[in-house]
Length: 289
Image 1 (cartoon, one colour):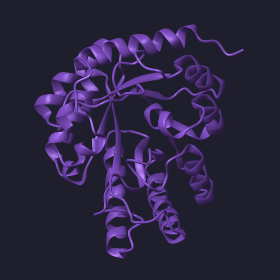
Image 2 (tube, one colour):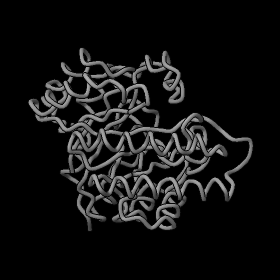
Image 3 (tube, rainbow, N blue to C red):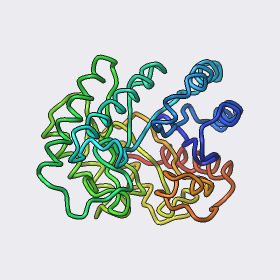
């Protein structure tokens, strides 16, 4: 398994003067990748991406990308114009991933994050979602990029809350370039058993976020990390494990309020360094009977 860290643990916005000095730091901690959350505004920063491509390569750090939709670009909106905008946005994200020689766009790709309808999901929204993701996946296939959809808790989105719902969506779409992204923070809220959820995902699992149950320090929480790693090893998962949490400064941005981090749990460097030590120690000691 390969270890990554979430950029927004340190900073609420992506700027060259912030991310470039961070690259050698995270590499020295043992991380091979850094995950960045994309937004429509961020995609326009051409010089940032050009600089980051060069610097990440020189420091040996892979850039990983995730995103979430909003009410303005939701692929399940009742407005065809909005749905078309959302599909275009996801394709633009795929282009950026491909420009970094990446193979995955992860996150809440199926509907609005933090924007809620007045009723449970409808059959029409489900249909629009399948149509939109199929179109994006076809585009992504030509770029050798996979879409990894992340179930998120009921307080963040309303369409896909559980791994079972996500797997149903993936199977109904039936596209080989659509896979599953799981997150222990989200699973801790919505799933009955994290271990069984991972086992049920099997080879659909393509990306994994390691988050403390309170989004603080890993190991200082109630997640059954031994059970998590035992399940990951049982399904032969060998891709990214990204430690995810956020700086409280995220609340200063509109999208940042959706993660609801109101206090500082610990120093970001400590969360990162102690987190990777903790996870690697479990990976090295856990065996699969």
